[in-house]
Amino acid sequence: MTTWLIRRLIQALFVVLAMSVIVFIGVHVIGNPVDILISPEADQAERARIIAALGLDQPLWKQYLLFVNDALHGNLGRSFVFNEPALLLIAQRMPATMELAVTAVLMSILFGIPLGLYAGLYPEGAVARTIMAGSILGFSLPTFWVGLMLIMVFAVQLGWLPSTGRGTTAELFGIQWSFLTLDGLRHLVLPALNLSLFNISLVLRLTRAGVRETLPMDFVKFARAKGLTPARVIFVHVLKNIMIPVVTVVGLELGSTIAFAVVTESVFAWPGMGKLIIDSINVLDRPVIVAYLMMIVLLFVTINLVVDLLYTVLDPRVRLEAKG
Image (cartoon, rainbow, N blue to C red):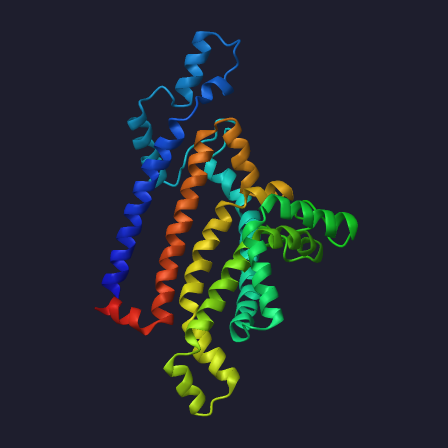
C-alpha cells in the first residue's frame, strides 16, 4: 500500500511539472501585456525600465526557470496590476469560490442520488420519467441563462431571495464565510443551485444506471432470499456497489466546478476567483493567470489522489491490487 501511494505521489508530481510547462508557455505566447500596462506616451527609457522591472526582458526559458524556483519557495509571481503577490490575491478570493463550489457539489449529492435511486427503482413510473426528462434540461440549458431566470423568478418576481453578493458573513478560522449566517445562506442558495444543476443531472443519471445494472445481480437476489428488508438491500448492497462511479464523478466535478464557476460568479456578482481571473485576462496580468491555473491543476491532482484513496475504501478489489 505504501509503495502504491508513493508511486501515485510521484505520478502526481510529474503531472504538475508537465502542466506547469504547458500553462506557462501557453500564457506567455498570447498577447503582450506591455502594450496594455505601459502608457503609449512613455518614452523608450521608461518603457525599458518597466519591462525590466516586470522581468519581461528575459528569454522565455529563463522566465520559466525563475518561476519554478520561486514556486518552490511558495511564490507564484507578483501581479503586474496590483503589485501584490498573485498567490495572496487568489487566496483572498478563494474562500468565496470554494464555499460556492462545495455547496453546489453537496446539492448535487443531496438531490442527485435520491432522485437517481428512485428513478432506478421505479423506472416505469410517471415520476421517474419526469425526473429523467428534467435531467435532460440540466444538461442542455446554458448556465448563464438559467442564472438569469433564477434571478428573474426568485429575486425579482417573488422577492424570496437576493440576487447578488455574499450577504452578511461570519468569521471562522480567520476566514469570512456566508453559510454561517442566515443572510449569507439566502445569498448562497441561488448561485449554488445554478452551479449544481449540471452535476445534479450527471449524478442522477449515473445513480439510476448503476441501480438498474445492480438490481438483477445474483448477490442482490441472494440478499432478498435471505429475508433482508428492502431498505437494507437497497442502502447496504445496492447503493454501496454503485458509489464508485458516483465518487469518481463527484470528485472530478468538484475541480471542474471550482474551475468553471466564472460564469455563475459573474451572473450573481459573487466575489470569488472568477471575477479576478476575468479582470486579469483583460489586462494580461500573466502572474495572476498562471497562479490561478496552477492552483486549479493542484486541485485536480489532489482530488484525483483522494478519489483513488476512496476507491480502496469502497472496493476490496482495489485494496488487493494496491497491496499487490
